Image 1 (cartoon, rainbow, N blue to C red):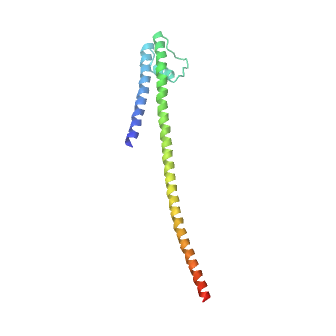
Image 2: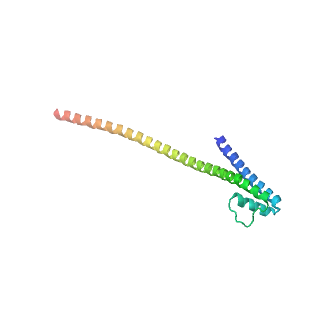
Image 3: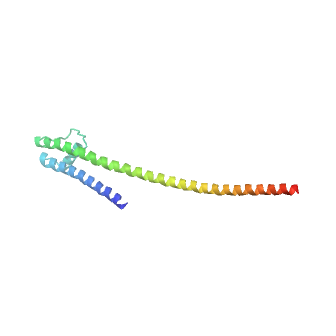
Length: 147
């Protein structure tokens, strides 16, 4: 059980590190290629990766535009894939928790039903014994009346 909990945490860490690497790569490239401030470089990187593109800042040099085309083709699918993995795992965990709770309820209900059936079975036996006693008593009375 511990292995299942550790692996996703490490994968989350890897996903976060990959996204941070993608953002850092774009930021450093734009900073030195375009000669813009660090704030504008990260701003341009985030807008590019998130496909926003307001147009207020854009790569001007041909090398930066070429980098941006390749960067978009690599970074966007990577970020979407990693985000999708995290979301999928989140919902799988929620579904698993719900299934576990449902299983617990069904087991509890099953045990209650089993106990109720056992009680009913015992009561049925008691009723059958009472019927036999009543029948015996009636037969005894009929015999006594005949005498």
